[in-house]
Image (tube, one colour):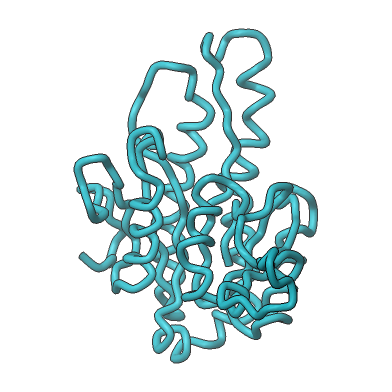
Length: 249
């Protein structure tokens, strides 16, 4: 299950991996540029021809995850469609910049609730509902399938930058701490939780590099870590002194 599927990262994830994963692509408005149950590729010279790219399709669910009951509906649809969820990628984002600072009018105050709702509330609700509706009682299968959550945070969550990112940065810092707590609690039933904290993409870090970092976390054994993804690294590196108690190295 991937949230923010219509955004820059979500679209790149779907285009790179839709033949490798069965993806429940959750998006609010824009949809990823890949075959789905609603759209598929057609050869204009032979419209009836079978095209290999259509053999794998993402399953699109359009939802505003800040609305009451939306996360629960998404989880129910995903479980009804596939019967299980092995990976949750929380990549939905809410851009929030106050270039003249937090005391400039009402901009920062107006941005607070939607930013925290998308970056903290939605990941918490989705993870909680998935746990309650399957994972909590499925420990051996969780471990055998290496089930895990990857939260998409930001380098802004651990730094102070010019440009009015106070609210955005605070929400990402909260997501980092939520990740650590979830990893500590979810280890009881064998679900790993990590976050990546990329620098700005695609301006500083290639979006494809961020996608690779998500895949590496999905395939690895680590839990309770916040991983940086910077321009000088080909693989994610752990943020030191940011490990949850009992997390794997």
